[in-house]
Length: 157
Image (cartoon, rainbow, N blue to C red; front, side, top):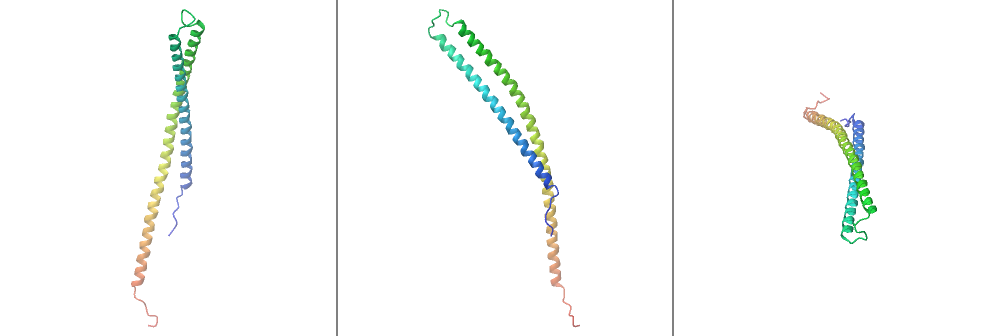
């Protein structure tokens, strides 16, 4: 009875390593996407706080008869433009990150497919080896049984 050996074992290990590397790359891209989404949420919160502060300032009596000073209005407008530019930049970065995420997901699917292919080959090889081993065991059993059933020859005759 021979020991099971799979000639593609090292290839399988290599493909599994490649798949783990691609999984790590995918996690990195997911982390980048989370970070972009957090930055976007921070910008949205900052804008909401500024809008809220502006609304509250409109309701309280002002030293200026027209409400806000020109400097205050300019600052609020500049901040809105800054937030809008930041949101546009983050939207572009997010779109790029989503493209990388989809590409990396496709790469990972291919790598997993390669691993599965070799694993199926190994399963077939194991099944074939096990069937051959069973045949050998049955054959040895039959030979042992036949050897016990044969009449013994008398060496004296």
